[in-house]
Image 1 (cartoon, one colour):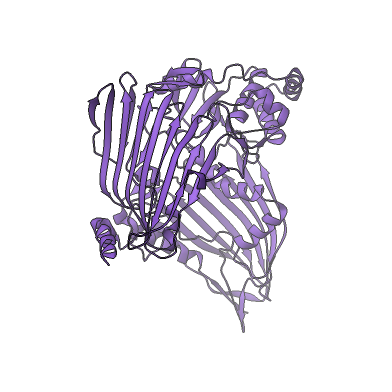
Image 2 (cartoon, one colour):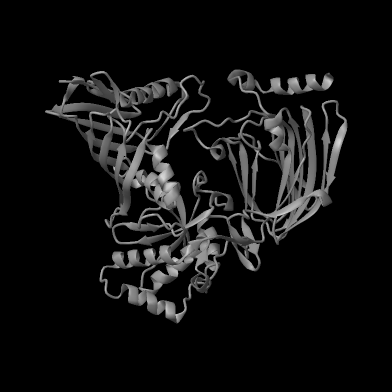
Length: 619
């Protein structure tokens, strides 16, 4: 009984749990990380972890995973599982760990491996404790989050760094006010960062990412020596200078390939169009496969290797693209970025932990062309939502330079629909629709385009609110404009589009773009609201009515102008034709959680408006 009381006491220590009425599936009692850094090529790491598993959903937090590679050696491991009374029910040692290749399902080959063990017990609650020690041959830095993941409060989190005098590092704290305590211990300096009773973070739609919200510490060595590649890490410029050394002698192409490149582009005088030709050649002749090998996965494979094997990771494909550009006298810049939730957020603090992807920048006099080299589907000049609106580290002979990737604004992110519908007396509908999407509004069409025929057919059947839909034909085309866009033309029939009761026919005219409210109006908002991009939608649907019917009820116009966006819709009738016109503009921005109710109401009104019906009656 006293162990149950102890667990409840630990829960109540975290005031946020009671305030949000969210109770965790597990509670971390402590996580202790200790680094001993003798020099930049000799690091010893010791980790201790204890977690209480409160229910079945929390079981995943009892799985231990240890990442290793050719520069890492696991020295020891031991673990114990205890029941609610504190009795040992199982234990594990180093020999019990299983090993798999990291990312094995999409990686060609890798020296990155994961040693893991599921430490479980099926009578809740129970406790998992483990500790292990690892030796590293290189010091690349440290990232230490004070909580392990969403929904996990932590009783105590402690980071200790023992570093030899003369081995200097920089550190940056995120969402953490504590300053490192430091003391001299013989020939070492000892630094500690400590947190107690760290509140859990819970996920919500349209909120800042876990990486932004989690209390954490970043540490970067001021000097680095990795497999003989030495350099300084005290600035982004020097980080870029070190990265430049990894690119040397890796852009040579076979003579036959050089001839192919020149032949492909010789008839085109315009440089931008030459680059477009080579980008399409890259997309058609190579494929993306992760290759984690060599210098920690930080050095690209030579361009000749990619050319021969027709595959590569983001590093290899970007380096290959630059090698092809150099053949036609164009300078492409190898650029490090953080993709998706990961971004370079600290402009005064370089670190490996803020970048995870490579793209190519091609500077022109008035603008910069950006190329995402890992996708077969992205239009030329579009790098995707996950690469946009962030800093990148351009790697040049003079060192690294922080640059801005494209920002896709509401003026860029536009989706428009032009469509004609014919409603039959029996309630069926035939439709020809044309979507024209630009900016991030291309993402859905790109997803459809990436599917095979069976997947595309299934996706379209799920996209439209149909009961008896037949898609007769569809095609997705890419424009050749400087600013790319996609068009999607579709022809379809819906046999049960309208409802018929006696002499009355009713239907929802907004069939082609139903708004889905992403928020739950009944939930209490915990996080502030983050809308990462703005966009526009402009639709005109011309609906031809059955000859023997006239309009009995037509919804009135709707206008809303809020800090979150603008919305308006109207119906215009001319004879036996009704035009449904819908416009919306959603704004990018950060909003206090106190405005959650107003945002939900705005979206709810759009949803209600989109579901309005037209009623017809027989003449």
